[in-house]
Image (tube, one colour):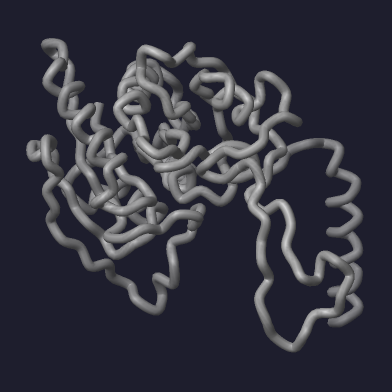
Length: 283
């Protein structure tokens, strides 16, 4: 199994270093006859909130990179790329570094990725992008705090990784871990994506006042922020509520794909017929 490790906090982020050191131990414990390898391709700076964006690759059809060393994980080749996490995932997935991965591991992100924030997370955007190229992926995040226990998240991630390796290709999992020492972690449960949003409200227009020609729109952040926030309105098995209760949350995800719901057939057929008639009259 060959693992491509990336993140959205940047190649110098402590969460990436902890995950890389956990991968070193995982590789060192490789059973006889099994292949375990890893490579790091991560952004040169913080790209949080970039989702699956790759930037304007047409304006600049090349990516600058630099070799990097992670303390305690010197045996893993590491590259710093001037690219967002999704582009790092693409370049790694297509073998740009003479390394063909089987799976993308993204994180450890500094802050929970729960609720609707999964749509905006660069950590998750990397594995969603990898799935479009046939790879499974695991996104790992830990709840924010004064002293972040990346080590707990790293240990849980390795346990999940062992099972993800046996799953079908394109399997995507989102792992969120509470900011607790491993001994205080209550366990791991399947979490549902809650309705918690990253942006709760914004002003000054929200109060009904007309907007000036220019100005600032102050935003009130919701419970899907790194600090997690108030999750009192969530169900007990929602991802944010599980974190608040001391459980790690593991959620299967699905990347973009065609919607084959037959309930849409009438809408699609009517639209196609109308457009066809319009084009026919225009000839």
